[in-house]
Image (tube, rainbow, N blue to C red; front, side, top):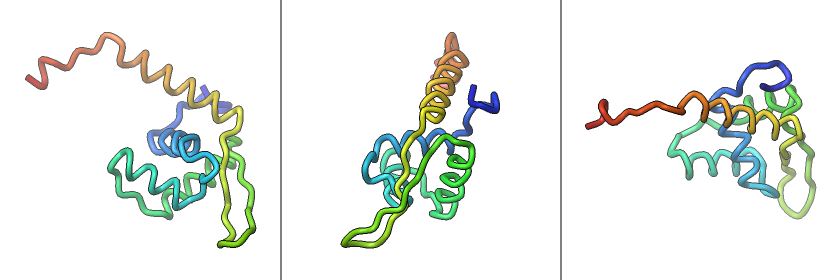
Length: 107
């Protein structure tokens, strides 16, 4: 799995995917908006920033501060370790679900 051999948590996985999806606009509020748009989850911005900080501390993200015409922003990008963690977490989820049939529960 990741460097610590622990699969990503659901929110960690979702935030890493949102960073990839938002690319050059991967700052805290935009990541939050993307998650809310795609998942329907109403996330507190504090939870997003705390998770971004934790993922950066684990080496799964990198950030840089931008300065320009608008407000200064901290932009995030996926690291190689972050990409590996996403690949491994996705593979784990697919293995876990392989052979599971829920039709009897939802019919």
